[in-house]
Amino acid sequence: METKLYQNRTFDTIDYSDKYLSNTEFVNCDFIGCNFSKSDLSYNDFLDSTFKNCNLSLAVLKNTGLKNIKFIGCKLMGVDFSACNSFLFSMSFEDCILDYSTFIYKKLKKTYFTDCSLKDVDFSNTDLAGAIFKNCDLSSATFVECNLEKTDFRTSRNYAFDPSENKIKKTKVSYTSLTGLLEKFDLEIE
View (spheres, helix red, strand yellow):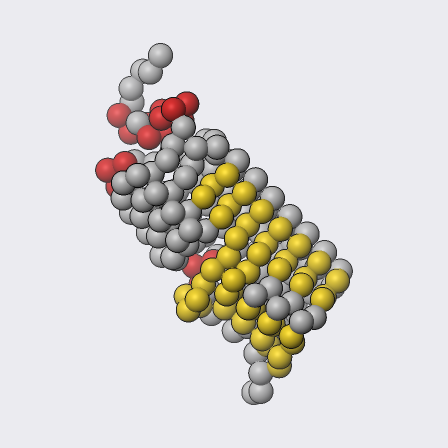
């Protein structure tokens, strides 16, 4: 099957929910107000593209390439990013809802998460070295066997992780959130 190519295009308010799209490459495209909820976007490639105010909740991304992608104001609930193609995998998130999503075993070095809701997100075995979580809610997010070296959590809230189960050299945390790092010890901190 031949791959379709779209370059330098804008896709505005397209409803692609519950549909299947494959063998398509999008280069330098903008998706604005599009609905991809429950879509199967497997085996597509997105390069240097932006999703703004889109809904990708429960979208299937098996072997999908996400290379230098910006998500702005998007809803990405329950998305399994761990199924994506790892080659050149890179993205940033601003003002997004990523609750219940999964990034297991992904490399997210220096990824920016700004003003995002990341409740119940699974980051197990993820390389987040140098990532920045700016003003994010990380309630019940899972960090197990992660590389959190030089990761910046200082302006975020509700994060908790076990320092003995993660690489944390030079990790930046706020003084007020230290209790989230000591949870397993069942201390009474006053």
